[in-house]
Amino acid sequence: MKDHDKTFETEVKVTYQEYKKIQLYFPYSFWKKYIITITIIFCISLFALVSTEPVTISELLLTNLLFMVIVFLLFKGISLFVRKLIYKKKLNKNIDNIHYKLIFYRDYFKKKSESLTQKIEYSNIWKIKEIDNHIYILLDRKNIIPILKENCSNEFIEFLKESKTLCSKGSSKIENLNEYIEPSKKYSKMRFFLIILFILTILSIWLGTFITIFLTSINYPGFLIEYFPSIKVNIFNFYIEVSSALMISYLWGFLLILPIPILSIVLGIIYRKKGLKCLKNIVAGCIVGIVSLIIGFVPAITGIRIEHSYEEAYSYQEFIGVDIPIEGRFFELEIANSDVLFMNYFLWEDTLETRTFYQNIKTHEYWISDLEISDHLAAFIPFVCKSTQEECYYSVYIPEMDVYNEIPNEVGEYHIYSMMYDPDLLSLKMMEYIYQKTN
Image (tube, rainbow, N blue to C red; front, side, top):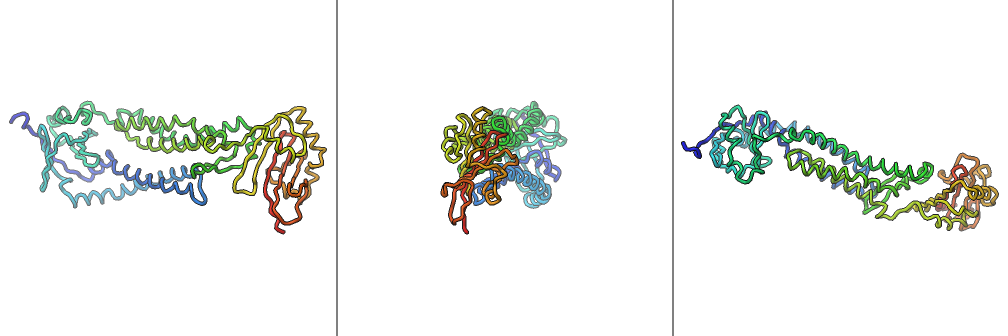
């Protein structure tokens, strides 16, 4: 027999144990179904951002992460439960793919069963992998032929390892089994790093939140942060909630975490081509990267500013009734769709001018101490404009009546300016809201 006619033959019987190993080593079908399901759930969940009672992106992300874990466990449980049923179905439906012979020639091989014979060119082989006691011939991701080494002669194994005819479409297509090392073992350190990077990518959303809080806290005093409420910012019908309005100015802190999802995407693409299972790094990197970009550019896109030029503070001086210090900081938050129209905050340094300002307030007719506030008037002072300090002074102005520290008696709509000066914090709080008197 000539060398090119020389053949090797082996028998393949895909038992249930063999079928389980194939599912374990090549879980393409599982991951395909899982990723499609998660993608559908994520797309549907986006409608929650534009519903009548929209959720925030952070709430959406947490919910989707929970769904990812639940769906993964559910799919795993179902796959384990129905695996034997699927195998029995395959056994009854197509015995030709369960029990057959393989006859190898120099340029092709045949897959021969009782009722069917297939001729397969080596050029149609997608990949060959050697794992444990098996050699797997992959015609595609789902069509896999398992060959048990103990059923093969040494000469046949050498033929598979050394035959150059397997590389008919280039050496990059078929892996040289002499040199082949399972990617998870070859890149074991990188595989571990990619797992850590995936977890870090998910957690980086909270890292972005921490950076934003940190930047806010080092630039604004705590009492100022507590004064401004949490707000939801609408950007392209996506709602982003911040626990204090002052944090909006430092949402660009989320851009500082971008290297993490970008690294996850890049390394995921590189090492997925090398055989590692790291699609999760690419998906997580894309989702976290997009969310971080949206949140990070909120200040630039919306143009929302809380701290304004101090010159704008002078427009409120007529309501205060006392000349305010020449230098200071002025904060203003406009609140849409609310009875509260504006929340303002004036902040000064401890100077002679500030101390003079306090003395003028104490003696001015528009301002009264805590002891002078009647129970009826106290109802017009919002909680955020109250203090337990006796040194604080208050003023309530109603422009429609052009009076201070009086309550309206007639039915109608009134604009209320409630003010409180705190000498300890050297600050003045002002809230403008609408009061509707009905009887």
